[in-house]
Length: 198
Image (cartoon, rainbow, N blue to C red):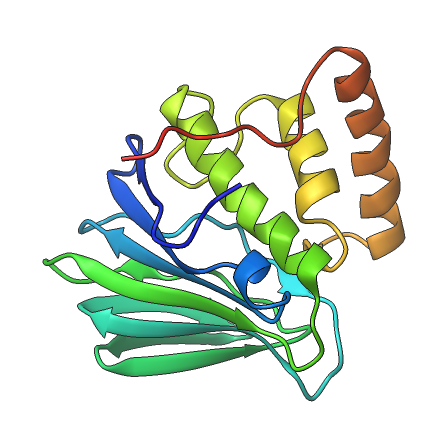
């Protein structure tokens, strides 16, 4: 489990990740992660959405330095520091890509009015696991986990519900990822993998 101030390095994308706030320190109300992204690289994440109340904010991206592009709904955005983009619940989106020639510094922020320690803790562990798998050469530049069983187990246990992909019904995703996750566990895979710190 990450601690506030922990720094990780993804050798595949050359991206540095710093945990600014962790849910264990604030009762499960906030997770804040700073990303330092070289030109041409991106925060990991295929298009997805976070299920929740239609009037709430699921996550926020704050561009502190550089220029980023991302897609929110049908909008393709290009934003430069200082800028903030709120992502609503149930809104399909991608994460920022560095669209400039200098390093992008962007803060990914999840804040909950009602504490959700279990959800934010799982997201924290997913980010750690993705960096760990990148450090082991088992994830690609887009943030895809290259082993399908590892991907299914990690997504099923650390992201799925409330996070979903946009192309399949939630029930289908839950069934498919759940089935593959059971196979992965029987074969000795672990959902969470601890990364090496900087």
